Image: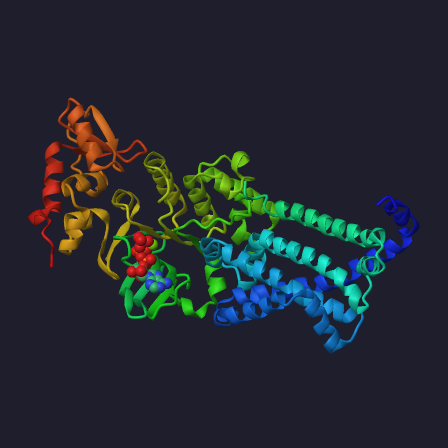
Length: 212
Length: 322
Ligand SMILES: Nc1ncnc2c1ncn2[C@@H]1O[C@H](COP(=O)(O)OP(=O)(O)OP(=O)(O)O)[C@@H](O)[C@H]1O
Ligand SMILES: [Mg+2]
């Protein structure tokens, strides 16, 4: 354990590099998952989607049920190795919490508020933009928060399919039996997840200011 | 002016509004009164196309409402919804500003208008404008809802039990202020209520509804004194003579000219017969002077004049006409 600090000190640059890769893979996946997930959530909240709501959530749920490792393996089978399959696997993994929370958030908006908005002469788009989405804001951020934490942890596995990231240290450390190297990957991954979680929780609270 | 012509609304097989015709003149306040579930809200919401009629026509100032887009129509009509429906994430001021903003009014003008409306609703602007709806009492929220409906200064207002959540004491007060306001603004208003005193107090005319139909339309004293159906008669219940005294204004009586010698007491012609009666009983003269509110004397009345008016009004003891 006391080799931890020297290892950290010696590999600072490397850790930074892998951290960068990790953030890139997870970040790209999330940047795609957020609009996609929100789009799905919004679409499913419309009246016309009543019939397909169940099946769509079931399909998205399947993506969640498959263990992340298996999902990565599937991605490799279909798309080969590298960053692209990793991003796609993480994307599939993080859409559900975003879509589900966005949908739930919109459902939670009081009917009376939507009714008043219609009565005052807002268009559907204006109702969505200035009533439903702001009121669903905290739910949506909570979904993004879950997705982010999940994607950061699952992102460590991306190393197995050649997408780099902090997983490189973890898996090298495990196979070479070098705990300090393993921790050099695990600790920053954990800190990254905790940091993102904390940051987003602040945003979530901020969006709930109006709840007294 | 808004006119409903044989308007029907059915939900599945259920009839909510059963071929109603009603005309509300410009500047008139018409109260839709009736028991819960009789179709008041449904009728009201057809006027701004929140509910599409199954059949029939609705005209505003001679134009079929189906000729305007729902969004454009609604911006021209003020609407205070039964469940208030303030936007929880917007402050009081932002809530009130909704329609003016949609219509592209300048921000400075909106702010001035918001404060004006808050004062009008008896809510001190400095105290209330930056609050969120969760920081308001039920009655305060309702008043903000009314202010929001008035914000774009629409000529036509639809109000669905706007004072329902206000406690009796404040309710009487806000009712009086609202009537004073309406006397000044002269909006065309359809006002839903299931509170009899409120309806009698505010209405120019009442449309009394029962299970999707209008039973009778008329000025309050008319409905009380000559109910068209047994339902109307029983709806007002209690002592209809008392209600008539409370809803008839002295101005509606024939006022004999003043005789020689000044009567000791005088009241305004706007007062109710009940107030006149009390004044006659507490004063020591036999005569009560009636003035027009601006210092001009209109004449004087006696207890006998009130009795005669009541007897005429309650002709045949107000047996239903059909
Ligand atoms: N969307 C709807 N679907 C089915 N039935 C409805 C719908 N809206 C109203 N109704 C029915 O139509 C009838 C009239 O309802 P409405 O809301 O107009 O009554 P109301 O007079 O406003 O009652 P209240 O005083 O309780 O507000 C009721 O029987 C109600 O159940
Ligand atoms: Mg109603």
